[in-house]
Amino acid sequence: MGRVYTVILGGGRGSRLSPLTRHRAKPAVPLGGKYRLIDITLSNAINSGFRHIAVLTQFNSASLNAHIAQTYRFDMFGQGGVDVLAAEQTDDYSDWFQGTADAVRKQFRRMEAAKVEHVLVLSGDHLYRMDYREIYDRHVDTQADATVSVIKVPRAEVTGLGVLYADAEGQIRTFREKPSATEDITDVLPPPALREAWKLGEEDYLVNMGVYLFRLDALREALADPANMDFGKDILPRMVAEKKVMAHHFEGYWRDIGTIESFFDCNLALTAEEPPFRFHMPGAPIYTRQRFLPATKFLDAQVSRSIVSDGCLVFGAKLDRVVVGIRSRIQLGAELRDVILMGADYYEDDDTRRENAARGVIPIGIGPGCRIERAIIDKNARVGANCVLRGEKGRPDADGEGWCLRDGIVIVPKDAQLADGTVV
Image (tube, rainbow, N blue to C red):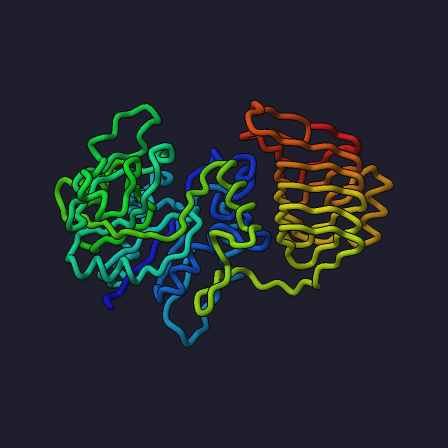
């Protein structure tokens, strides 16, 4: 197998996931109780045998950098490693990354120095499990300049994604980046014969998954034009017109976690008896930081269809379809339904809790008697006693003291505090 250099895009400002991205990069957002989004892509690459990896970061990258450094330590006798490459000023470039392609352009000399044959470019904010050796094999077998992993989605879901049309041999002939909900995209709808070959329904389209494999020379040529700032908007449409760009059909589970609603739905789907995504698979687990936390303790609690991470204390509470992050503390009489509770970065000992109480500071976690439904409680949040937080689909976005409402979901941001009796 020719040598592959893997590049994971750390993302821009992540404004659609705000306030979860207010103090962290999008790939650093917690997922599934104890993981972070970046763990998905990094684990896929490592499990595929692609161990020469760079993560390109720019905005709010401190927690992401720390997580990678503390988690992905390769042994000194093995090949490869994970490098974090931040935007930097050099003699060649003096500005920030201006897009996904621009980020790779400004670090391209490192790839050339590694003497690789192919470059695998991945997004760091998608939920899926994939063996990248499959796209590599197709890429090499078809002698493609670039290969794009694609998946079918219904018309209602293509907004915000790259839509494409591929012929019977799998060569991409047309590419349309992020069409609007009302835009005519019939030119990328395959005819009936091809719809059957691609296993598409009448209203299904093929979309770009954000997984690209390039020949190094082809990528160098595409990046030579400084006007090409983004892979979806600039690089792919031009390469489709001028080069051989092949589609690799992926038929597994894949979700773009780009909005609060998609993040919320993907997390709660993990609590199902047969979840669409599993973090453990023999021989190919999803990795994350190892922590030495005690087992979770339940006292007179009722827990249904929930995920509870390590080091939690649940006292006389009721949980139904809840994802509970590490070090969470839920007090007597609290009732949580359809909630993502991200947990805490540290424990408060008894002395600290007494000192905080004397100063009127609410303990980290969920206070007694709370009623919380359709909500995201970010890390280190302090929710006082008898608070009522109820999100509802269709409620307009709003902002309040220590809380906000996005996509009909109540969010208590990281380190925020809600006074006793708060009602949202």
